[in-house]
Image (cartoon, rainbow, N blue to C red; front, side, top):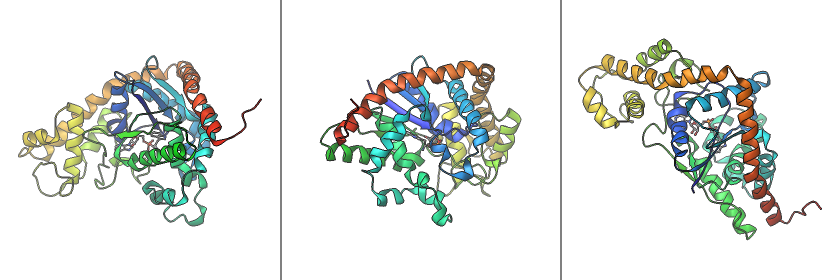
Length: 333
Ligand code: TYM
């Protein structure tokens, strides 16, 4: 059976970009693949500006609770926290000795996040994609459901796996490929539709959080930046704001963006935005309900994670042992 792996950072409150770009696919894969999903807390400590040690623990639990609420089913999928398995950090070291300085320096996310930070940027931020490669490759993942922004990281994981197998003459690692959704692989900020929707935006106004209440969602969608013309068509270059809303509506309704454009063109932005707002509210309503039920029992969430870590280790530990042997490290007696 196809093995699927993916990860998400524990920001606590996930947004519509996470959901449409990745999590919908995570849920869907459970029907046809062997799925492993990870809350990547070690990635979350790579940049001091985004890391608050007083909230990280709670955010990790809240993120797990949200994953359960969107439909990750621990009876079918492995759901665990990255730092619970030392194998991830250890495999990263083996890969550090295979990955090239040049290829890491070129990673778009590193370039973006390190800009203006000069020499103070952490080695962890630089090494971030190598840890991500370890996450994926330890589980022999064939497919990795992610948003478009992760494309380079998955390609790097593939390159590292291939180089390792070749250098140490053992097919230890399966080479993964990224899977993106047909629409909304890159959900844009509602206020700045040429930037992706992201927690690091300067204002919350352009971000629909999965736990925003209906009034807040409606307000954010209705004040989304579009443009001065009134036509509704799917054109990411000329009409980034309208196209973003069309893609969101497409996923929420299961219809195509072009189809929806044909329906709403001529009706004006007011009618169109009201339809998008309503669709998003209805899409998130059951998730929010389930979240509040699950949040009442944090012990159950921790139990899910303990079970997930044990099952994850059954896959990751033998992979790491084989990789260490391939490298020539002496196994303990
Ligand atoms: P993270 O936590 O930033 O995002 C989690 C998932 O959400 C997707 N995503 C988006 N998709 C569409 N539009 C957006 N605006 C948007 N924002 C986020 C991301 O593409 C991602 O799929 N490095 C990863 C986490 C990670 C990982 C892994 C992923 C660590 N190890 C192994 C896959 C496999 C990250 O920071 O995602």
